[in-house]
Length: 258
Ligand SMILES: Nc1ncnc2c1ncn2[C@@H]1O[C@H](COP(=O)(O)OP(=O)(O)OP(=O)(O)O)[C@@H](O)[C@H]1O
Ligand SMILES: [Mg+2]
Image (cartoon, rainbow, N blue to C red):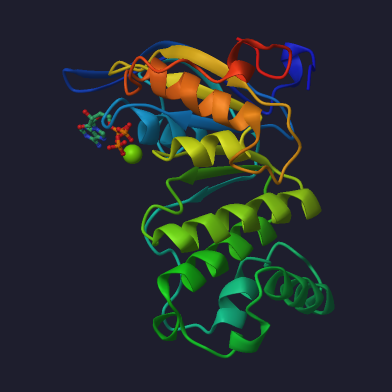
């Protein structure tokens, strides 16, 4: 999507942030366009969570400027569900921005159907598996009616197979209910399968080392040549790939461009 820069939904303009003597971000600029899905990958401790916290307004930058929309929702790795509420009430609570009760009930029904947990509507979080709880968390986030979703390693606490399912689920949910997303993940394949743009960050203070664009429609197969090429390029940029020849698509252009 190429919109004029003034139409970005989230904009960082030469943002620096320090915690005491620790400089986490140094003059970082970044613009996320409406409807765009941006993934952030980078070494542990480089400043990804800090970047999301600045994006949500939870913290203010030491210097520089962050322009954010009014409605921002953060999805954390940890469980954000209310343990004393059922699945149904947890999802419904996320819909409190809808004025009329009938609309809330209808939308909660749609969301439960989307995440495949209609039969578990009366269950409490402790009666669900970790993956099911994450799905409820996703439904709540998507139902929240916010313009911008900031997700901090939302699937890192679930097993590999569940993670693959949730990834596919998120791709499908976003197709049905499009949103602007910034996702932090350590899972390079997840980034390449979901994002329109993957930003590869450096060690702290985080700089944008590389920007990988993916134009393949979602849901994307992990074996799609562009996805494979993107994974290879990101791993190389992070210094995690050996000397293996890159897949042919890596240099094929225009699907992936720097
Ligand atoms: N509230 C805080 N007070 C002091 N230092 C902090 C605070 N939050 C983060 N830091 C420091 O800022 C740096 C970046 O932390 P941050 O949590 O943003 O990293 P990250 O990229 O999200 O790492 P990870 O991938 O491990 O989650 C770290 O050195 C961390 O110790
Ligand atoms: Mg973090």
